[in-house]
Length: 484
Image (cartoon, rainbow, N blue to C red; front, side, top):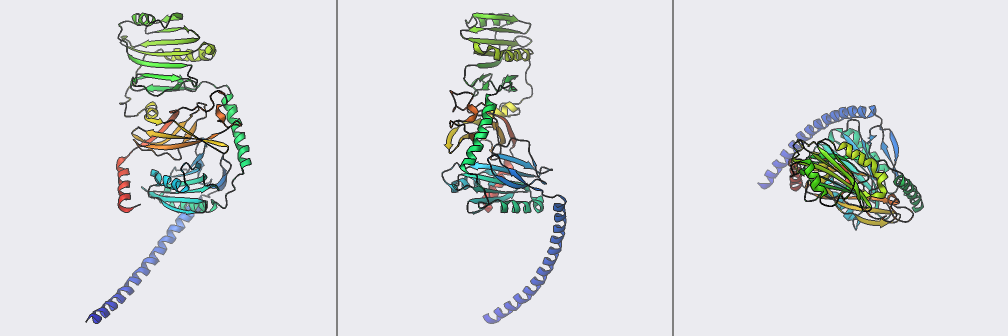
């Protein structure tokens, strides 16, 4: 009985198999026609735009071929990375260098996989290289890292594109990856690297030592409701104090300081306010004492230092804003134009409107204050130095990019190739520092007594994108359920 049933089952399976084979053949035939049609269309689309392969020379001395016919360079400084975009902005190519900061090569790979952009990535590797690929939310990406002999320094490229453009960019990825290998890497010699570093150090030194024009930048205090322009490359904002109505700006040597305040005056008239201020004993050596309908200004000296102060009042004199600048008298000529600009700009009492609460981060200043770049850690290797920073994102958006100038040298660096720091999270950034002949940063040669000092929170141009918690939650749930 069991054998008979088994025979009928075999016969039925045979009939089903023939039907399935015919169905599969028809499906395969239709799929081939469809695939041929898709191939014909996409191959024509690709043919219409020649990839135009061209060599890109990285500033650290290595080169890679990229499709110049499909990508145009973004107008951002190169630093350790350069961005390229397609004409419709649907694809982005980044060519970059990276320095391994972890104790092991494997730990570096794992740290990359923790980055939000590489969540669920498929990893492949070979001798001296590894690659990450994947995608989600209709986007695809591929990144390949090729290391030097010590597996410490990497050159890399990353290509991200809309999934609908796969027919165009998959062949590009394949060709770039095939030509970008450990065996084919012409690593520069130590002598070549030294010559290149010395050349760049000389350029940075000349730039740092050259006379600089004053860079004026708008600062908005959205908590206190006032704004002013300040000399951003001479006086630098210090960390926000407990009183958000006060902001302090200092020079690199901390010998010059600008204090800006705003709040209630608590004194009925402008003249009474001025007399009360002078009676405190800090304005005994007055040179000028000028008063107008809604403001007064004071200049003078305090020992070897000079000061300029201006107090600006609201129409009913109930609120007052002030600027107080103090600097070494030996630098009076240098600060004369700054005082003139502050005095001219700070003449009309005005308040900021519709700026939102402190936590909304609607203005550029709030975005800057919402990001904290912690104290750096210095590492020194053969012929180069590296500064690593912890960045905390206290804003309500995803941190995508910022510029930092930790040495206050005017050499701003754009950091964007590794950033995607979510609200409430922290990330690591790293910059390479070119060294001069004495082994210290080339960009600090203009201050010989303080070559290795750097400052935290020296950042600007913070770029945020909206944070959609729902999308991130869906992505996390997908990762938990399907392991991708």
